[in-house]
Length: 257
Image (cartoon, rainbow, N blue to C red; front, side, top):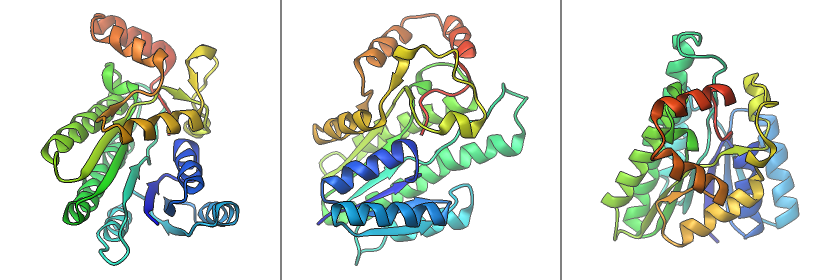
């Protein structure tokens, strides 16, 4: 039986990945900051699907948290076959309204943690000749919108570059770029959602099913909905100033985790 490690597993897209992978018979390593929620999630998934669910409480905004997860990924005796780098957050406010400490924390979680965990996982996977990594970014990566969009753009470029370098090794890497997803993300960030049209919202479980299908097909980029595929196609040709104005009206954060 294969094992998947999911960061940010207790809510949103991470929880949807956990439900789907457990239902498919994968053992899980669940990573988040809240020990109590992790324990509840592990018990529920074990009881419902009969899989083993290990918990690892870690804050990926701290070196100690990243170190702990990286060490688990590098464990050759208990290998991880699939890594879902999902942990992330958004900041409420425009550039210079957000504290530098919070901006740097975002870079730590969205970029440094993704780099270090992907590297720990893929090194072990390459030695075994198999494995997969899904790094969760956002459609915000394709529009000019603050540190969040910039950090997610880095995730897109890093993942696709690493996928090219590891081609033929048996290790698959894919970056997932969702749009707005109905999760608790916006509430936790203190962001209103009243100005977001209903048609822009995605279902987390359907998103995960589409993403796993794209991974199985060997894609390195997944935008898991026709509506957002069209929007991102338009983004390639629309003036960047216009895109910046649109994203200002819909908030600093696209595609919650």
